Length: 423
Image (cartoon, rainbow, N blue to C red; front, side, top):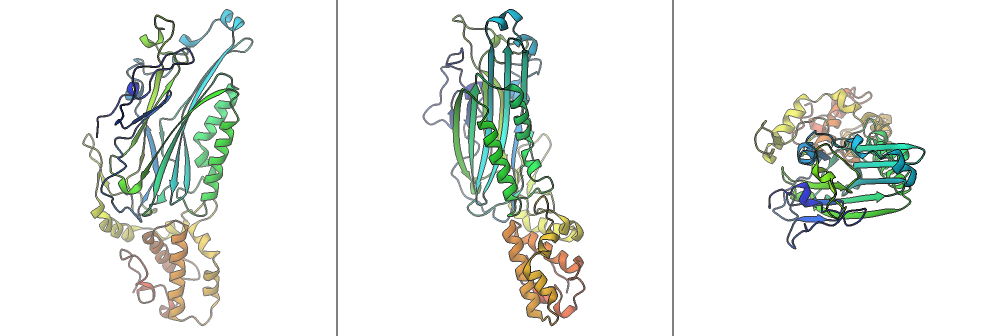
């Protein structure tokens, strides 16, 4: 793939709000999509290539930014803004009000499973109004790791929708509050669940919808830019990522010692880069109950290396050391643990109420358990770990006699090969 593109090349200069468009543009074969305030480099996540089977593994969406790359070239002090240089005098405010705000939001939409993850990148505002003085708002995402884990399916796809809005009339304090809510929305919607399941999906979807509605109602006059691109999970590699560059209008942000703060001969200047964000999928892992993944990392070395051949060995180690109590108390949603979920199922209560259990009843019980847990979003391996934990520790189940117990004789053929049931 072509080399990385600097933020300045990814986001051209303005032709409105007092600026002018740069000569920089994407060549016909370039992997970079550009509008005025947002640019995307997709070269490190190709749309084609030899597909790999990642089904039954978990991943999540991650966002990181490198402030050295994002702002170092134009902010020697390391500060994103120098507020003292942005201030307007009382006389200037007396004759003319000035309010400019720009906000960028990335939304990751997953298909199979269905999930929407809003990712607010930045919001920068400056209001200089007669009678209220100067009001500054800066909201910058440095990293995001709160998106839930999800089980990869054979047809999992991700679509990134990038949206930048700039407004010259806004209630600044309201924006600050909304953007802060956007940043923490996933945690608020599901504070104790870190896995996308059928039980937690509604909360996450409602949070995303609320964010869209809140942002949409803020603007009285705005300019909107959109970029959309999609990728299949089967084309993932350990270094696959999409880079997003964001800029703000010239004059909205000032930094110490930055020559770009000065206008051109015609009184206009170039857009100023705010940051470069990298959106990627975390290295796949085989279990919700263990944080270890299938990549190797060397400090100061090359990028992570994916080791798909190590999945069975890692699953065997997880199965040998997993805590039954912890598994049963893990959350499927903010209000429901795995044990709570199982105990509310009709097949569970019917099995316990059966006073004439046979081995075939236990086999049906095991099959129902695995099917129901898999349908919620757990992998076959994790569902097998839950079934084993139920047989060894769950009230009403672990006391069953050997003939009808959850053991290798009754249910061994149904579970993942890495999970050994009692003999």
